Image 1 (cartoon, helix red, strand yellow):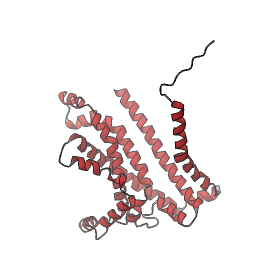
Image 2: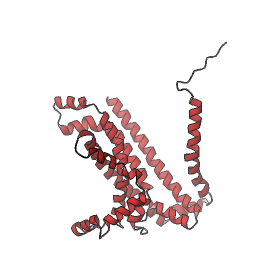
Image 3: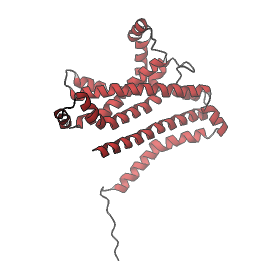
Image 4: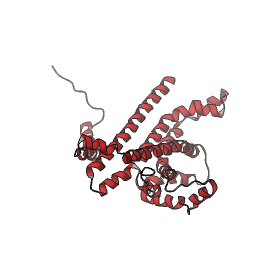
Length: 279
C-alpha cells in the first residue's frame, strides 16, 4: 500500500515558517516575556500594590483618556484627509501626501520640543488660544492630546486611503442614478466599505498613543495626578533602578494594548461578516 503525501502549495513552507517563528520569538516574544520575568521578582501583594497605587492609576487614566480622545479626533480628521487626497486633485497634493508620513520618520523628541515651543504661553499657537479663548495648551492634558494627534494621524490616513482608492466609482454612479443624495450615497455605499479600515486605523492609533513617551514628556509638564503619563512612571522607576516595579507597570500597559488590539480584531471580524452578509 502506498501513501500519498499532500504537497505544499508554497515551496519551502517549512523553512519559511521556521524562520518566521524564530525571528518572531527573538524580536517579539522573548522581550515581552522578560516583563513577566522581571515583574515576578515582586510578590503578588507587592505587584498589586505597585500597579494599583493612586499615582500609577492616575498615570493609566491620563494615558488612556488622552489617547482615546486623540484617536477619535484622528479618526475624523484622518478620514477627511484620506478622502481629500483620493478624490481631489490640487496643487501640492504630492507634498501633503508625503508630509502625512512625517510623524513616522521624525524623532518623537523633536516633535515634542517643536509642539511645546508652539503651544506655550509665548508660542504662536499657545498665545493665540490663550488670548482668544483663555485656553492653555502646553503643560495640560490638552497639550498631551495635541501631541498624540500629531503622532497618530498617519495610522488612520494610511489605513483608509488604500480602501478609498479601490472603491469602484460605478457604485456611486448607480446610487446617483437611483436618486440617492450625495449624503445617503456616502453613508450607504461608501462608509460601510471603509469602516473596517477606519476601525483598524483608530485602534492602531489608540494603541500607539497609549505608549507614546518622547513627544508627550515635553509638552505634558509631568504634574503628578494631572499630566503625568504611565510611560513616564516607568522611566522614573528605571532611573531609581527599581526594575521590578517598572516591569510591573509596563506589563499592565502591555495588557491594555493587547486588549485594544483584540477588541479591534473582534470588531473588524463582526463588521466584515455583516458586510459580507449584506452583499
